Length: 241
Image (cartoon, rainbow, N blue to C red; front, top):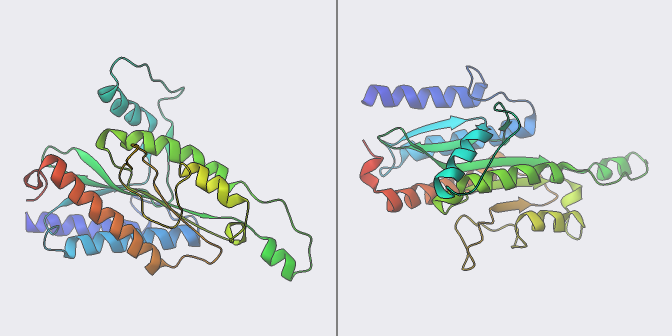
């Protein structure tokens, strides 16, 4: 078992950093920083005494039919469908899962990274401002789908890091983000249902770029709390080796 665990850790680390061998393809610098932060989370999890024998896996996407399968387990009398069996969602930082002894997977971290706004650069170049972009609208689809996916576990271990001048204080775009957060406060952690059973998710948005270390710190907090949530819900003995 120790050798198998070491191989798993090495494979996760290698694939997150290099993007090779099917786990994650790194398409941009901002995505790379987030993926490296997720990799740092995996390393720290295995360094903790409580977590050192856990099984984890990282997926770059989720098939919509898998989400529907979850929904049918909870809402057996409701119909659900997709148009294509191959449709997926691909959050920028992928999905990190905890695995139990029966090979069931439980999401402990789902991460996104969005940058929006070039008017600060255009102003420096003496150019006219452009209309604010729509990266945030594209994010909304994933928020809805992923929140639906995790409802059965009463947890939403989702975080999005947004930066760029469109997210400066006072920008109207911020209210679009707040709408996705079900009008909750931004820049604070929200993993579990509120008193009104809202699963909001966590949204860290500002003009200044998020660093790898900052994203790691906040991602680890979510992953750690999520692991303990599943320990409490299903029993720690079902996860540790």
